[in-house]
Image (tube, rainbow, N blue to C red):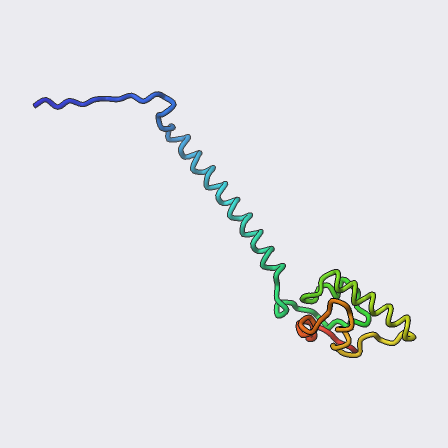
Length: 131
């Protein structure tokens, strides 16, 4: 029996890339994958940090809502810029109508502010000081 072999030649466009180009492609693909992973990690870390819970917030001292700025109040869990602005507006109006008396004697007084309810008060009471 005669052993016959058939050689088939592929066109150049279908032949595999030389070894150097293959290695270059692998390195480039790994670099792109590393960059994508890094960006995704950075994005997810930002989401996780923004969604911090009340127990995750650390303050050097408690905040007095009778004198605090809107920026300070906005750092409290569940408050944000709009509710902080509402607290400051209510406080200013109350003080104008009541000869400069403090608007908030205790945590429950904050519920007089539109948009501040029981749940919000429960989330922020440990961060506030009314003295």
